[in-house]
Length: 412
Ligand code: U2F
Image (tube, rainbow, N blue to C red; front, side, top):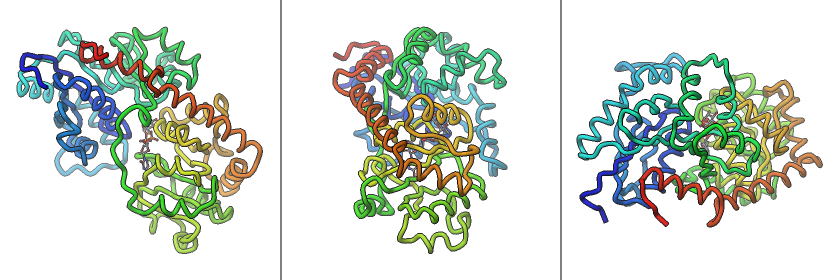
């Protein structure tokens, strides 16, 4: 029931690129469901809102309203590379968010009482002061990368320099992770922030949107032997260069491992000539795949990834070791952690896809003691993730704390 005198209004500021806005919305959906009397306004670009709100009905959205912020791009703009529009968007901040927040305040008649934002938005520290509101940022990547930012004095990137100075001002910092993933890092972070809230892995703790299996990956997996299938995906942003795509394709043909390749471009044009025809019974090249369901399937044997944090969590929950080819941001650090801290995967010889290096890496995971060890270790991590997300687990308790801070209520 909605209390007409309630004046609580949470502004949620999403970063509209990569896999950032969807996890933030999932977190807020769970919180909003616990606090039906509080208004939640969700700010992202039109394109991002269209994608993350797709398929969610009124009943699922409850007290959350989407608002579009200006993407900073001129009319009829054609990007010259994938990063350019992100730079233009960042230049439009924070004015674009402020304009949209003003509109939401006017529409709802409620001032902002709390800001929940992507942790990239250092400007929220000042905005929260201006509104006399709380600020709870969400770091959508792993604990190692946020610690690296906080600990690094000489940052080349000014945006991130501001970020690290701002985060200790937040009422709490939430992260899509669980403390047992790497306890020394969690302890270190606890000492840097007013409050650190591990509330993940979201794949276990938050409502997820449904990914349809349009290409029949799951029935196909049912026809494959246990632990034999190579799943390949480089997330939502990356397309490896042509010579590396070719090397990976050749390695698959050479090893004959069954595979599912979630390919975001045009496979006919971008994969070697004849590859699709020659491998049509060996594997499937699909568009967007139901990644989590694939990784949970008994047939999944190894995941080829770019080392994006959400994919790493998916693999941990699925119990599938990884071969990682990092491209930017946190991905190299994530890859090193897979190999040297957790022992649940590793990088490639020379760091890039070559035919020989990829064959070696695949064979090492699929058919050596090393691969067996990785599988055992990843199942241990999976168990601690499940415990954290369980009824009395740390992430569950931290989520309660998050909800109380954000809504200012006790929901026990
Ligand atoms: C950025 O990450 P990306 O979006 O490139 O990659 P991930 O963090 O691995 O997230 C990919 C998500 O998309 C899903 C998959 C993950 O939740 O389950 N998915 C799918 O459902 N189907 C597909 O065919 C392919 C993917 C950035 F590039 C990274 O460096 C950061 O770590 C990350 C988090 O901040 O954001």
